[in-house]
Amino acid sequence: MTAQIIISLLFPFLSLFSSWLPIKKTTKIDFHLRLLFILMFVTELLGFLIPLYSKEQNYFIYNIYTPGFFIICYSVFYQLSKSTRWKKTILWLSFGLILFFFYDNFYKMEFFDKLQFKTFVTGAVILIILCIEYLVKFLHSDEVYDFYYSRSFWFSCGLLMFSVPFI
Image 1: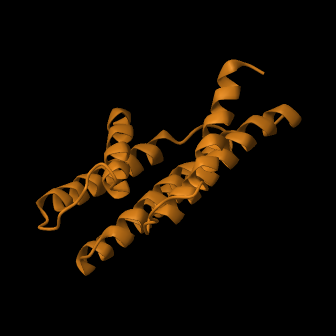
Image 2: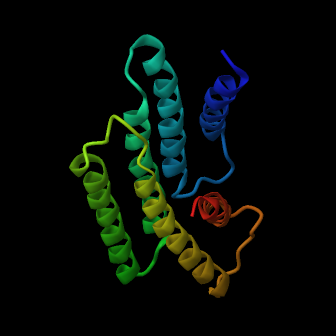
């Protein structure tokens, strides 16, 4: 086992483990964060084990991971949104990503052969739009927030910093 494999399995596991530690105050995005950590850990584990025990490539595991990751992130913004119009927009963008995923993977019949980067870029663009929209509403609201303890603020900032370099 190389150091890269150990790190790619250890960090998602530690993130998943730390998400189950007791917290002072739970929020409505905790469930989604745990779901993201489970998805990451299972994806990395299967991505490691499938080529080890079979002659198949692991591309399809990561092709399934891509829309799953983005849909869970979109659902966080759906939960955080207070506007009915914006919630409908998030649902339509999610549906659009799923349609694009099916087109990109099954119409071209490359689901098992290579990683679908176009689906990832499309999901990242939508995620950047959702992050910016949420952060603008967050910063312009009249409510008093403690940025240091706001999981939704740091979640949005982290996703924004993660997604922008892929575009």
